[in-house]
Image 1: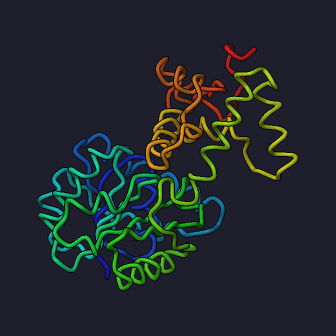
Image 2: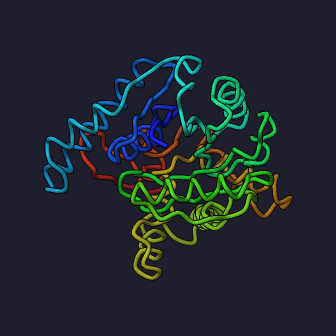
Length: 295
């Protein structure tokens, strides 16, 4: 298994393409946007050169990795030879099911079909393909080249053989795969997102400020990043969408996104991607400061 197609050239897609290419897979990176593909290739090269500066790889490794990646704007023309396809498009059920229909149509019968979804049902996505036993969740974490975990999610019809193959592939990438069953939010986001939502509720109720909440979780719970800073990093729109998936899938209003989170998303305060969320993220540096709305 050496040819991998990655659909979606955003943050997750380019990271997934990076790790496969660096581990000698022939990678086809696919996106409808030529500019997104160019940006992705530039990002991968920058991240590789940063690794050179840290003496983790050589310049020859950079050239070899980049030569393993080709970019494409057509799904139909790019999947026929793929052994594994990883869909890494927007976290939207309609978008993902549409892409999976195309993946099913244009891939070979033995090709594994994986999604990088962080919350959407694998079983539901698999209903749009002819052979649902070959559909599986392969949830990487950001930044993909750095984070070791791959949450491998078995849909109701996912075969044991496919799950075993994907576990082996993740191990070949130097990752640590952990198998979970297909329930809303799986394990990672079922545990993480209610914590983030609760931190936002505490802020909304005036229990403590942004830095105080984050500092308590960092200093008291040994979290590397506070929940509000992490929400900004993930994207507040993504957090809200996942909470809604949990609410609908588990049938409880306990998981409803709190009003402050919803209002911030409606106002376009999405976190790092928009430049402002709970913090203001300065584009020219890694410096952040608490948003004026919380002073």
